[in-house]
Length: 258
Image 1 (cartoon, rainbow, N blue to C red):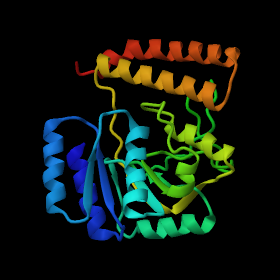
Image 2 (image 1 turned 90 degrees about the vertical axis):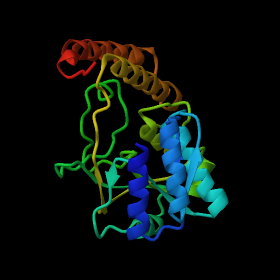
Image 3 (image 1 turned 45 degrees about the horizontal axis):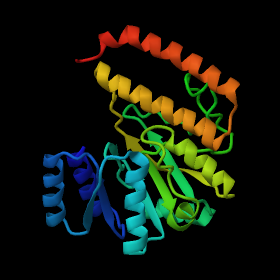
Image 4 (image 1 turned 180 degrees about the horizontal axis):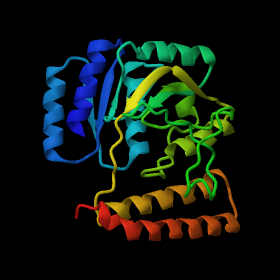
């Protein structure tokens, strides 16, 4: 994804007015690192930070902390490499709207490639952790998808930032609980749209297994550390997760490449 990250940084610098752009490269592939090093030397205003792959939370905390301490930024926008910013959408206007609303984190309206709106994320339960259900439109915002977030850096780090016990999955819901404990709000600003060109991560048995393990570990961590659920809820989740995983095993040969 290093070239996608570089392309996104180039588009931001051409059409936006950020204070700084930081790319966090944790893929540990030599070719990716060489490409980004060359890219950063050619494009003014881009810095690249390299780190071991310790997951979404660690990588984002690293980049956001750098922006706050080294560049003195009050706000920052987290963008996955697989998103695009429609023409006319200004990141600075989104940040201003979030700042005026007094929220610590803001999510934009996220569209998929077909133009469908990605709903906000509900509080995890043993049921919806296995069988996703859309959040009620009028429900208070617990969290929004982490592919695009505007973050007020001082309160974000005052409550600990992203939970680095999570390698992948559930980072947004964990952060939602953290903000609630500190009396902070997660906003939603649908006037600002980001398109998420989401790519299916599972293409083989090995990748499927890794992602299932990460999802299970992250969900249990949210249940135990952030929600303090008891044995019955964990048992119910494990049963549902096992059934869904067994069904996936039956159908995986139809779309696994290796």
